[in-house]
Amino acid sequence: MNIGSNAKARTGVATIGITVALMLGVAGCGGDGNGDKKPTASTSASRGGSAPSPQEGQSAEPLAELRGPDGLTLKITSAARDSGGFLTINAELKNDGSRDAVLSSQLTGNETEIMKNGQSFGGATLVDPKGRKRYYVLRDTDGRPLTTAGVQSVKAGDTVPVFMQFPAPPEGTDEITFQLPTFPTAPLKISD
Image (cartoon, rainbow, N blue to C red; front, side):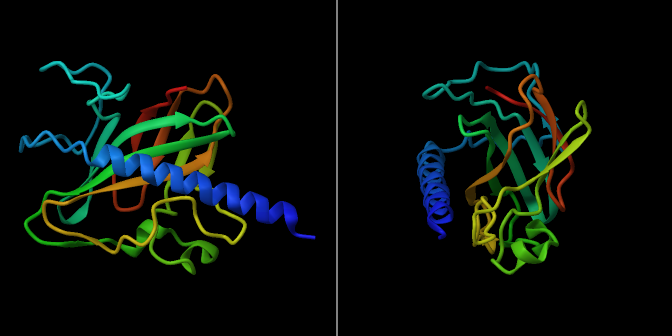
């Protein structure tokens, strides 16, 4: 029987639905509107400036900000462990360019199973430098990556909420390196 697989698929779909709903709520909070130029990859360990205005427990300061091709900026807002043994990366993909940006198929990765499910962020990986291990995006029982999917392009000035879900590194591992094709790598601190 395939009852266990169906239950896992429904649980995965429910998790995705909840995560997307939360991300849409956060995306509606708006941006800061300043046109400051940021470094290619930066982390928010200790920056000066005005005090952030936390909203419902989230810091206004991103964990990392990565500049990609065609004016795209990926702002990683959280890297949190879930109770089910997952690590979820939440981010905002913004087009700072003056033209619409078409997303590269490289973001999907090169695994056949993920590629057959269309455009996604399935090419993302996490590296645990301490444990010397690489983590790939999780998939549901049908091989679909547990990431934002179906985003083909981002209009000039628009921001799209993005998530990627991975197996969680072992407890005690609190620093990882995030990798996404066409973007620079970035060190991230995991929040528990």
